Length: 349
Image (cartoon, rainbow, N blue to C red; front, top):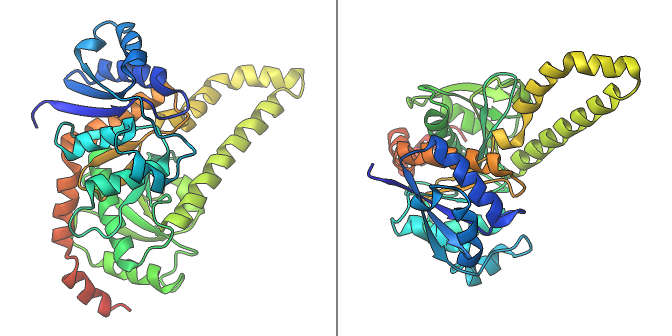
């Protein structure tokens, strides 16, 4: 790859341009050979970038005062948002000016604009939203997290192929394990779509190992590297996990403030608690990815801090350098999609 260029939406997210610029400055300390196209209000961005010595040499500002807000509907974003900071960042990928785009803005709007501007890869019916989640072991890739409320057999197979390619790229795994989220681990459990998908994945020769069905308690246990489900189930699962993590943190804080002995216990346990807090910190796992598009787009948490946005930039960099879109296309070709996959499906339905 020639010089890596990353497009940034500077006006998305809860904290806006200041967070994006500070996050970019953090990212440049590790990524020393990439440049950035930053889309946003130049009057706001100029002093922020100037405050970080050396950053101006790595950044080109593209001015626009149009932005997508959290209240904008996806349909409105498609009609009126293509000249916004978000739309222009995605268009830079389409036009070959950047290899990947990063935005902390409205998720629905970003997905809609990305689908319209980039289209899907050949062989992909629907893109999926994937992210890394912390577990007791190493991080797990989980998808889909809400891009598709419903998913058929072919969609789930495509999600598995894309998730495995993402795990090989971002986690550096040569042969990631893949599981299907289900109501039980037995082959007879679950509805027909999940069972048919499992049968197809068991027969694949791709560089992945299908581990079968995974129950909900296997998510946090990290029993597989890639966990596949439809967007409806995935979104509920990830939001439940996030809520549970916040609940446990709040209950621990209350428990350690219960009395003098509890405060002593907190002091003694503080190193371990800090390690746990760091492991569960969303900013350490920031960067959801729209997989299956003809271009790379990374979605940062809207409430990410600069460290979290830098993490999302790091995910974007690794995907771009690995040419993830080409990797997914090659894997789908090797798996056999469209007519071949339909023929395989006839035997399992």
